[in-house]
Image (cartoon, rainbow, N blue to C red; front, side, top):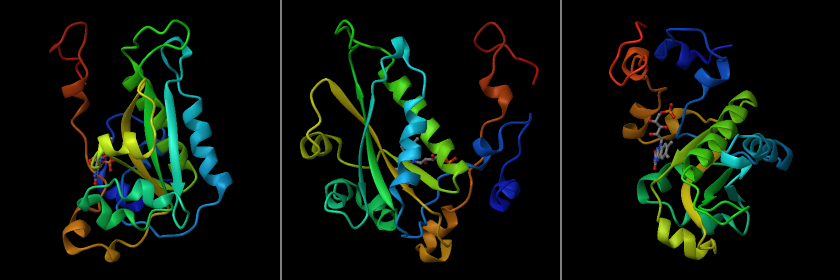
Length: 201
Ligand SMILES: Cc1cc2nc3c(=O)[nH]c(=O)nc-3n(C[C@H](O)[C@H](O)[C@H](O)COP(=O)(O)O)c2cc1C
C-alpha cells in the first residue's frame, strides 16, 4: 500500500518493492516511546546486510529519548537538526570498522557496507510503520570522543528513528520540505556496458 504523500510525489518507471518507495525521511516525529522489540528489529535487519568478506564492519550506538544516554547523541547535532530531532524516539550513530578482522588489512568498502546496513534498517523501519532520517549534520570529531569510538572505526552518520508526526508541528520552513523527494530518471544513472552509454530506459 502506497503512503498517500508518496503516491502524489513519487512515480516509478518499473515496479519495485513498496517499502523501498514508501521510505522517505520526515522531520516531524511523534515523540512516542519506542519498544525495545520494535527498535531491535531494525538493527537485526541491518545485521543481515552483505559486506566484503562478510566483515560486517557496521556498529550502532543508540539512545532512546528520555534515557540517560540521549543527550550524549542529541548534543552532537547541529542546530538545524536539533530543531526537529527532539521528537525522535531514538537516535543511533553508525560507525564502521576500517580494517578486516581476519587480517587487519584496510577495507576499501567499509563505507559501502555500512551504507547497505543502514538501508536495510531504513526499509525494515518502513515495513514496521516507522520512519528514519539519516544525518551528517553533527560534530564527527566530538562524536568519536564522547561515544568513545576506537581508532579503527570511522564515524559514518547519525539516524533519527520514530513514528512520523503531523507536519504542522514543524516551522513553516520545514513544513515546506516535509514531502517525499523525487529521483533522477533511471536513464541518467543506468548505463549499458560503458559510462555514458544509454540503456534505453
Ligand atoms: C548520509 C546522509 C546524511 C544526511 N544528512 C542530513 C542532515 O544532516 N539533515 C537532514 O535534515 N537531512 C539529512 N539527510 C536526508 C537527505 O536529505 C534525504 O535522505 C534525501 O534528500 C532524500 O530524501 P528521502 O530520504 O526523503 O528519500 C541525509 C541523508 C543521508 C543518507
